Length: 219
Figure (cartoon, rainbow, N blue to C red):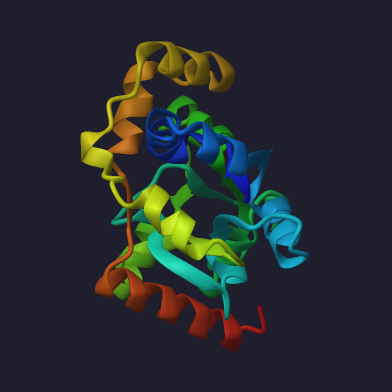
């Protein structure tokens, strides 16, 4: 099974869980990782060059999915819009669509670079898109869902015990991500408190609402 890995801080607990729990040599030999950013992974998944991945919500229509994703209950810090001239972030189709659904104009920033911008420009006039969505619809925002084209039973087995509250991120991994992103260990851990992964009834309603509004916009 080829699993595409979004190597952003928001999935750090999941990747730590996978690394810790895939102890079987058989499983390790079955799973191959391909790293990339969300929009590129969407394309690879649609062309079936990868078998499973966290797929951007906008691209998850009609795909087989599990009840796991990347969810913000309120503000998220890593998906922001800087008011001004419109500019999409090439890495994320969902966040670009969210800005359009919310009728907001400006530059979209996502991922670790957005989180770095958030901490370096706290007094500037930017908009947290997940918070704006929550303010408008009183729903969490689902940025991605875990989709698969085959090996569904294996994937369910792998993720069965995943619970972010039980994941302790080793210091050496925190340091690696901190050095790479320019974001302190403390701010990474505070940020991860804002990310959830379970997709329950409320999250399913939120995803359905987003896809409905995206369709109305022709997105």
